[in-house]
Image (cartoon, rainbow, N blue to C red; front, side, top):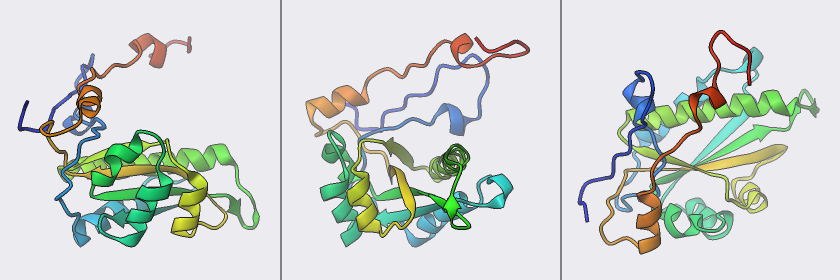
Length: 199
């Protein structure tokens, strides 16, 4: 079993920046790694300075580090399915929230979720730039999470597990199997068009 973190670069049809090509979502994290204050702030700032329609910034990210009571609460009641088996070994959770209201009225959800998605992507790019890894989680309990983080008039979009990637050594067979699965994507023509109409 390898003692080095697994690398799974994307097999692309064009040159990409290493931060894009090398990004993937591992489930094995080094549980001994602690996210520093400056690292946590860098993630928050990357989120804050992402693109925003009309600069409305309809978002909030709650960064919870391992060893804190809020991190433990999310681990115990906020995660669903297989996420409970691996995510608590990460160094932090980034809980993404989307505002439901603008000036007291319901927001356009499509625009709001688009903005939050951009902010999430920028946070993950910053994570990669710091030599860390991130894994988006949709298998969560939004109601429990909202209560834990004190969300008000906000939708819980997802949680991102963040930390230093671990190795395959001393991991469960199921986790190792999932970690080693080949990365795949749809064919280019199914995903993007250049100088032609969408399929």
